[in-house]
Amino acid sequence: QVQLLESGGGLVQPGGSLRISCAASGSGFRINAMGWYRQAPGKERDLVAAITNGDSANYADSVKGRFTISRDNAKNAVYLQMNSLKPEDTAVYYCYADVILSNLLVREFWGQGTQVTVSS
Picture 1 (spheres, helix red, strand yellow):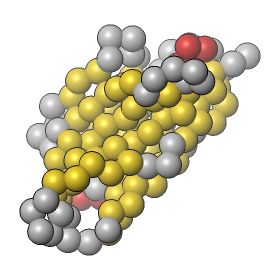
Picture 2 (cartoon, rainbow, N blue to C red; picture 1 turned 180 degrees about the vertical axis):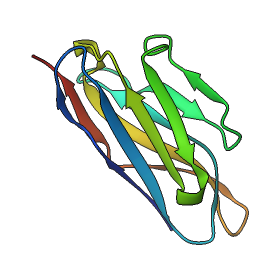
Picture 3 (tube, helix red, strand yellow; picture 1 turned 90 degrees about the horizontal axis):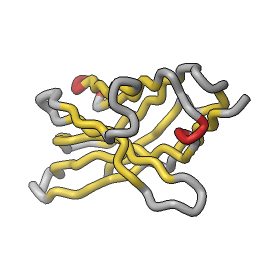
């Protein structure tokens, strides 16, 4: 019904920047919150940032001041601008969306993940 496709991951040096994107496709749905989680090897999946359809955002303490989440409701897309990247930001980043389906059920959808590696 709804698919989330991420793009923009890759390898970046410490202190560098990267922007990752996620777009939802499908039909007959509306999106409430969207956001990003990340999972490093051997660790749990943790929230990085989330944004409501009213553009209210919240961030993990570890990324405040360095990462910025934004969305384009017309494109059903969410973006994460990551600046001043650190090696500890290395992880697979997953996009998620809280979706209201055409039958008014609410479901959470996830992208397949995009690898972000911060290394010199």
